[in-house]
Length: 354
Image (cartoon, rainbow, N blue to C red):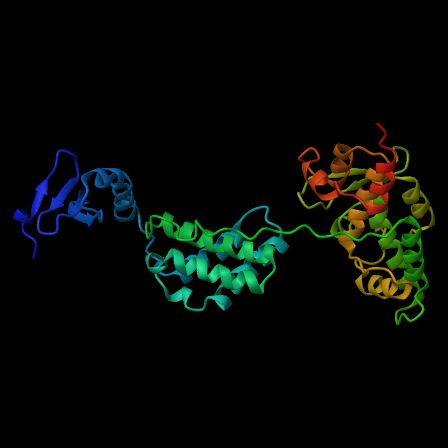
């Protein structure tokens, strides 16, 4: 056992040296208890450099209020779920996605739940993230890492750890989606194929309703959930605007009624409160694209089509960004749509003359 004679004091407060090993230690009193921890060096200059961080770590871990019900990483992950469940203003879809990421953590790292936070090493976090990065999409892998970091955050608040062992793990870079969008002529052919529905098993009105939804999305740039909740009372024909009430950020916004949208609205059947009669058209879109030999597109791609067409028509990017509901002044829109369609870029290049 170490005796007092085995320790030598220094001129630096809290810094002592273990005589037999010549290693330097930090010595501090926490809650009436003397704590000594090695600084893992025999050089006093290195010891002095490491001392402040080590003192901070000891005081945080031993003096912080420990949450009595939190002992394992499983407990910390449960707190992540509980926080999502009770967070005000969080959409149900976002809450479900957070639960999904936590579930994926349990599946991909089954041993984690039983571990104490202090026993999880940085190399373990790095190895886990490397595994999931090769098996999951970049956005999902990054969100799983985000949920893990939230769990470590609760461990830190409870005084169970000082440093998040996952903080040095690098997120996967998300590659932008390469958009292959139809031109105006192809889009009209696409919408007509949905409306005609040669091999559809649904009643005829359903095909027409799916085509209406597709055109509404393309002519407005609205997200699917925003579009399907538009009511007839939200159409302001005098101002030439459409009010979106159910938006991603929760703030209402107005959209312009472009000529194509105006023509669509005049032929839509006014039955009920809602403008659109169906809430999705994925199968109809897939079938129609295959039928006319077009690349498959999604509901959200129609939002991209609207933005691209607006920019190609000469609308400035900040205005397009405002119509899309972006609040960054056009930064995201420029990043997403700056390349535009190849045919438009080639045509624009020919107009550049020195």
